[in-house]
Image (cartoon, rainbow, N blue to C red; front, side, top):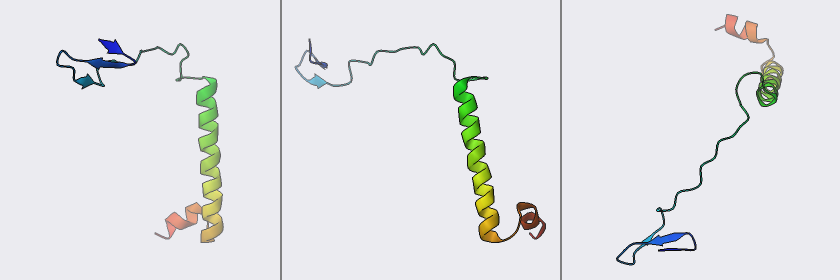
Length: 70
C-alpha cells in the first residue's frame, strides 16, 4: 500500500525508505575540455594567484624567498 510517498508494511508499520528516488543520467560530460571544466580551472587559477599576491603582501617577501629562508 502506497499513500503519499510512504509505504506501510503488512503490520501497518510506516516504512519511509521503501520508495527510492528516480535515477537519471546527465547527458552532458563534465570532464575533458568542456565549458564547465574550463570555467572551474580558470576560477581556481585566479584564486591561487590572488592568494599568492596576498601572501607576498602580508609577509613582505616573495614565495621563492620564503622557501629559501626555511
